[in-house]
Image 1 (tube, one colour):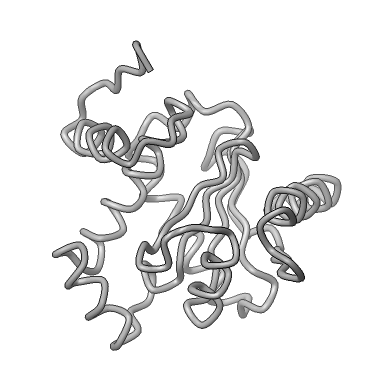
Image 2: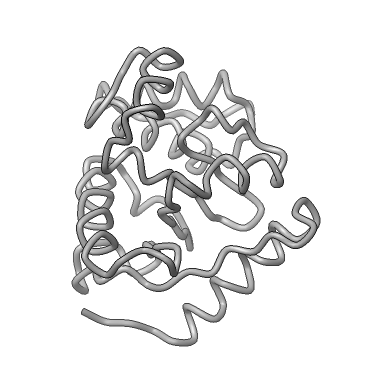
Length: 181
């Protein structure tokens, strides 16, 4: 397990600067996830909100790294992924101007994607809410969320429709074309 203090400080400042214009006093403090070196490309990092237990951070980050490994994340330049507890999710996303019904959110200009912890550990009320919105749950919903957000990230594209198309292509193990965007 390799932790880079400078990376953490940089990531925290990136998160704060990305969210500061949209979040009055909201901040998200993160810690590096205990992912073994070589599991992910060096330019891809996973973090957990600092109020995660170390056990949950380890478990959820391994699940996320495993899911990411199915996709061409080596095509990303520097990118950070963070897992946020469900009890903080809606408030954080609302303050950022995002859709609180979605369990994932990307800030493209800061090369950061946030995932709600419900994707890794079900919470009854939130899981049923997500099932209604996305007609999926458990690992299927995690796969949809990760591939959709990578659809944004790989093409640096804010379009939800194109991210959905890209996500479907990724799940079908097809190449994503970003031309004409």
